[in-house]
Length: 373
Image (cartoon, rainbow, N blue to C red; front, side):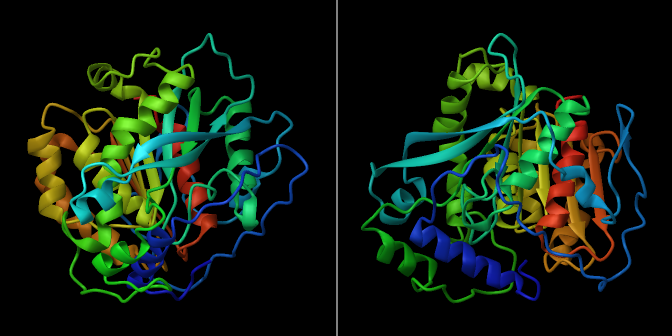
């Protein structure tokens, strides 16, 4: 999906989604649902990265090629469940845009509970973000043809085969425009309601309009999303969602996303919540400033390590060069904070495009190593 769309086209989609506040009703991960047809990977593109040709953790090898990847998300006979959760929050981005101090709104997210979920056990939590033009329904439901059934199948198989840690997977959204504020947001972003105009070509810095909702999600994530989930389910937080305890339990929390969800992972995750999240996955997206990213890791959150930082892309992905360029500029600044194959990985699928058949395999790789370091 999305082949041939420019990088700025995704900013356009993201802006339109933020303005519309898109969403839909639940279609869970139970049996009997139609499985979305996954796009085929393009054979075009540059040669795959030669930096690392394989990774193995806890006896499980990362997927390094797209071929036959769909076998990993065939239907499983031990199925997890998906729950729909509504919660009250603030329209943080809109508050910053308008200068208003209190704009409440209700949002929702979805949570995958693994087969045999047991409230007497403690579970890790992975917060998994969608990309531009999508919403909270993308990763875990089949509503509107979304590929959530395949995601659930993948997770079910990982659980059954004992390849991943006990983990709840949560799909929230950075879209957050309350009714009545659409025109204000559109004007701020420089978009019209039907899509928007692209801005300049330089990488956005924090404070730039085009990533306003991704940056602002940092507050929602810490203040509402994590507390809602980790007071509702049995996690390592133990029901204590105080800020102090979220920091103390950071080793059991991860954040990942694709495209503008990768942008959100950089900004809302690494650059603002590294003290309460230990694991990160960036798929097909590098919209961040290298100096700001390095500054967050080395200065703002200097006492905190990156337990594992997974980066994945495809050689024919429209976001390949920006993502790889950001890492090439940033990694030398980080010194021994990041060590390849120890707490970092770059996986590049030869011929991989900006599409689900790549992102689902990046998720698979993350699940092999997250919460095991």
